Amino acid sequence: QVHLVESGGGSVQAGGSLRLSCAASGYTGSGTCMGWFRQAPGKEREGVAVVYVSGGRTYYADSVKGRFTISRDSAKNTVDLQMNKLKPEDTAMYYCASVYGGGCFLDPLATRQYNSWGQGTQVTVSA
Image 1 (cartoon, one colour):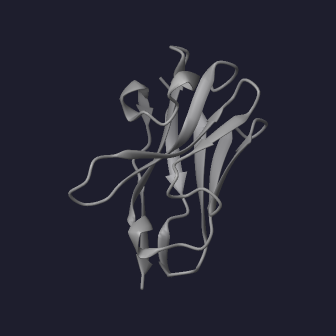
Image 2: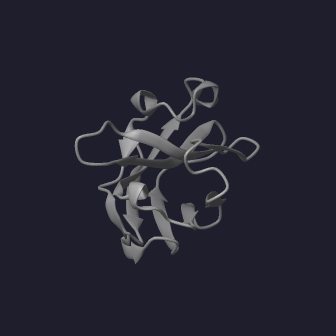
């Protein structure tokens, strides 16, 4: 498994921006999916944005397309999430996660396949 540590959460007004960062310790090379997931109170955890390291293809939930951007820095072993035009419905605990292999690219936003998780960072968007 990979050790993941998130940072960058906070509170912002609607329309604002935040940048989350996830620092990884361990293998996150070819064959790995890394990404961001979120869980709001009373709701299931959902995939937000994922990058498939082999080739760098990115995947986004429909609710964040055009507003959020995921990026990976292989040298630093980090994956960031730039969140723009934030909405109150984006309020949640955000988690970084990774998984190696298993065909993760087939359904990259599916939470069930991820076996390494960070502790989470809170994002709160006020109206």
